[in-house]
Image (tube, rainbow, N blue to C red; front, side, top):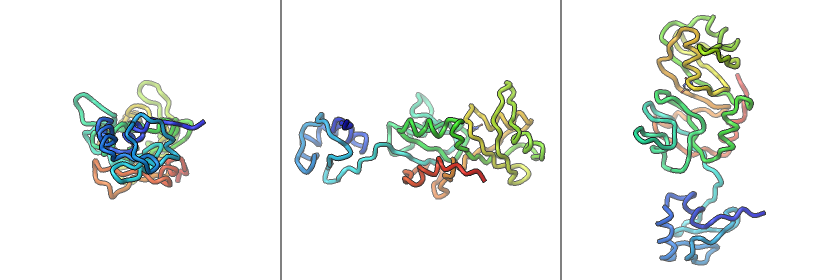
Length: 236
Ligand code: URA
């Protein structure tokens, strides 16, 4: 069965025009449906087949959108919040949500999308999509921390974490790879070994790396190949 949608819904999700603006554009003849002026915005269309033109531009229909953001500190990983600035507030597109959360003081790779199934697959520990973090801690790392991480840390509340990958970068910094997303997980894992995390950055999800040309707060859309890299889960 065809997946028909209202014309104004399709335009509002694919562009930055509000429903009110779309109504106006339809009245002024600025919306074409299959090359003919279309004045009724509630007409049902097949977004995969019908060609919609708004102000002379043909809509390139995308079912879902996926952004990569280099999350800055001080911004909340949420869609909206009464008082704090959220990652969606600083994104060019609205009606999206972050796939998983980074703490307010954590920086780095965050995917923001409207694809709930994608987010679920990326976050489910069973799917073994590893998230890579660079953590800087308050005192010198020892070999025993690596062993504890690799054996499965037991958090202060008794929760047993899955085995993690741990590679020291220098005396105070390590690359940690985990496939779970418990609240404050990396910080709690280090706390279980008596370390405090001073800085935390997510640098990779699956095989998708943070684009270093994005400065803090900047974002860009992911390509199809990059979306697939999230689920290409080679650990090395
Ligand atoms: N683990 C944490 O402790 N914080 C994050 O933001 C992400 C993982």
